[in-house]
Length: 292
Image: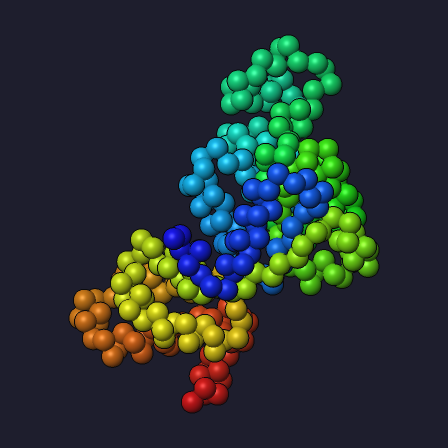
């Protein structure tokens, strides 16, 4: 059983996505995974993709973040980059001859034989065997209307290609758009809320770090601090854990061997770190006094 599948809170989402992706039915709609920023949506879906591909290496699943895109056609470019593993260092700007030649080496295409009206989307194989995951839906440029974005995804990936589409967003932000409810009714067939899953995330956060054993031994304390903060932000927790690990690395063995001291240190460090990242600490002395 995979680590994410062992988490209880979102197990129903895993099962539903399996049904949606594996089914031969042409659903003609997308699945929306919603949750507040930092709730673990991206973490959940990336672990889900990893486990799906582990079980079937031929699984065609592409994760694309739409954060900051300014044009709808940028979606094609992002999908091609993901499909052909074109990273930042080898990224090409589609359009010029030099760019096309660079891309040709990656995709084994002879661009000297293509038509003058070649488009990036011509490189994509969009069909019912492919799943596209679009994250950060609410973070596209304000130049793009929500109605246009959803219409583009529906037309190009669902209607034309019969592909499976999973969207991730902070639904509260999208709901600020007056047209969102009407658009959602047409495109979204099912909305599922990703809950903050501490157990699944924590095990992965501490993998390979110096303080792994110590943090694992104090998992219960860390969970209590996380729950007490009432913030339910896994991204913030991850940052705090890594900050502590950097501090742990420079501690002397004498300090590390004092269990009582280390427990107090961990509690104080995480409490201050989380509250600071939440923006609740401006005056340290005033904050500390209020907690006594």
